[in-house]
Image 1 (cartoon, helix red, strand yellow):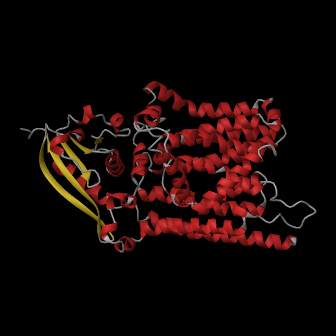
Image 2 (tube, helix red, strand yellow):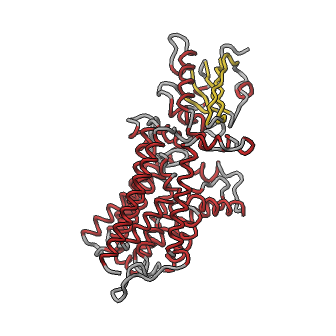
Image 3 (cartoon, helix red, strand yellow):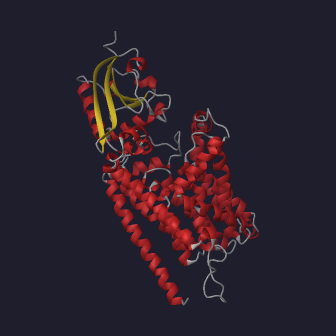
Length: 519
């Protein structure tokens, strides 16, 4: 193959990636105008009202992001999703740049970017305003910067600048999600390689770790001061039924296959095995292998042990693999050969294309299901349970919030204080959606045992003193207000029904409960 033909093929692949990005951005921007927050997104949006170094679920970076988008308050779904749509579209290009920064083959780097673009965990998952969005970019930045630093002359100016930049990126990764800490361990492992030990004798890798520690230190200080709520939540409070089991193992495997797509999942397993075998090739391979194995061990054990583990917890494990694909041995042809060896097995051209096509088809199917209510209408009623369709989280909340706000204003007596009427949700999902959508001056509490951070933001001992409670619940988690609040009496009740595709998606009940009217 001539150089010109190789360049032409590379250019065609770049053009195809650009076209795919344009289509993906258009779909995401279309979605941004039509869907609201998912329940978890609403919780992260609520963080903007209560800035702090850490929350029950995650460190505080996503709260800062939400506050930035919302100008100090909770952002609108449109604003948040417009930003996340752009970021998700840039994600494959970030992978491409990282692969090239590490010396990846140009065509293979574009192929790696296609795989990233096709994985539903990126194509769909990064559309949400979640901690995984900043973590993705910070994680790739750490790998690219550390790889370049380890390839630079030990102790030189380039190595110093790259290690400092990597340390700042590592700090960002850690305050995005605690899993970022595994990258620090991966760096220590890479420093133990023959080339890495040369850098370990200079101060710069340790400066990088110190910078990351400084950025993460407010999280540690806050956790220590408040009794380690995030640690307790992850390892104790939510793990009553925890234990290693075949059920958890099956959930891990099937979850990863669904989030990555089956063909890319198999390819990733093959690449991971090959990367571990190639870890002694050079210091970059040692870094990528460590950045795969260390998070896999830590997060994998947690997922195998926990019944409430979610597939996206393992997302960081996959990020080094497209970078390795771009630079692994055999990708660049030696001078005596006109082209790289032909791939076989899990990395054959047919398998790679199938992986990208299946991933894109799965991602397109998710967007179609969310954005085309006609598809819901075609499902036989006997096969459709709206409580299990998480797409229903994305619809109806603006109308419900407007209804609740109007109910609060009507219920407030003259000259009353805002705290005299409190909106209450029975579970954190409802409370989070209401907190994100309602004005700041309408207090929102949570009456459930699973209350996320609401017990700190507005403790029950505070909101229970309110003269009036506006209780909001839906058919996913209906409650008996008389049993939940035996010292109050219902003075008003109405319902609001949200439909999707002609089917009832959610039925919300809004009750006004009065202390003074109690018998």
